[in-house]
Image (cartoon, rainbow over all chains, first blue to last red; front, side):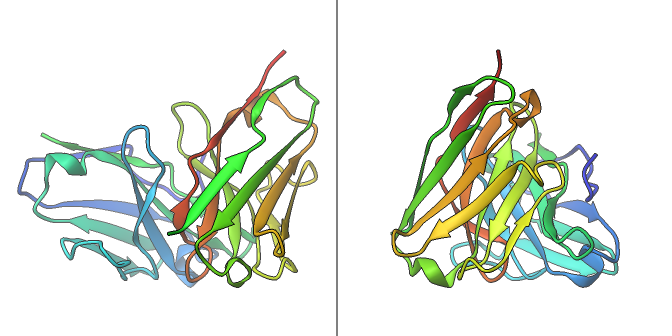
Length: 110
Length: 118
């Protein structure tokens, strides 16, 4: 069982918007910055969001992140078939003194 | 260009040991935390261990604490993961990962497969 909870799967049509949730606790999301990763099949993960809502260079603004309390959300607008991937949230857990990841969410673009 | 090249993976029997290495280039190595993240076949990401830029701080997932040791040699731009008392559940692709601002990862190695089996 992962410390952070994500839905196993989400789906939406091309051009639409999707959100992926990540739920934690005060020892992790509630008091530490959240990051989000995209993992395409057979490849290493890619950083999409850091510090809850900041995008690294090269990440388009149709990708967004937010945090409220002990939950975080990744948003993707203008969905493309190339967005089909697994998405993971991650953060530092102050009680564990370790990085924790969510179990991952598989995005299907119908 | 940032490059992270892992080596040292392979097949090992339960109870055995392996040492993974990750050679880094393209950035000021000592300025960044480094981590090892693993992914079992068909499973999600699991952070294994991390080390601060100076090497003074080391951190471990509960699942490997007491069995794995992370270290780095900033003169060689290399981070290591010594894995002892290996178990079948340690079977995974192990990624070397560069820290960005804190512990989030902006660059990943290609991964090295560790298989623990008799």
